[in-house]
Image (tube, rainbow, N blue to C red):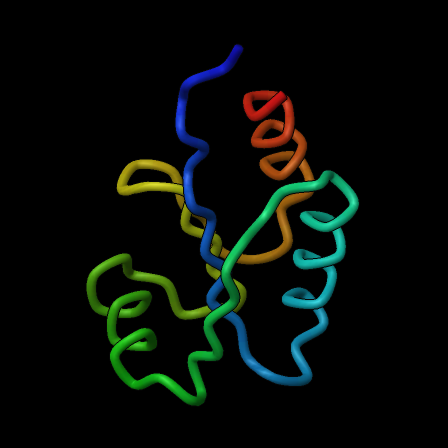
Length: 85
C-alpha cells in the first residue's frame, strides 16, 4: 500500500490559452489531479509565477518547490505520470 501523499499539482493558466488547454487535457488523460488557478483573476498568483518563479508564459505547472515548468510539456507530464504510478 502506498502511504505517500501525492504531490498537489497546480496549473496556473489564463482563458483562451491553447497551451493551457493542451496541458490540462494531457494531465486529465494521465489521470493526474490538479488545481487550476486563473492568473487573470488572481493578481497574487500572477505575481507568484512571474516574480517568484520567473515565468512569463502560461501555463505554469507547479508540482513542488523544485519541480515546475512553463508551457505545454508532454514529456514532463509523462514523467510526472510515471512517478505517480
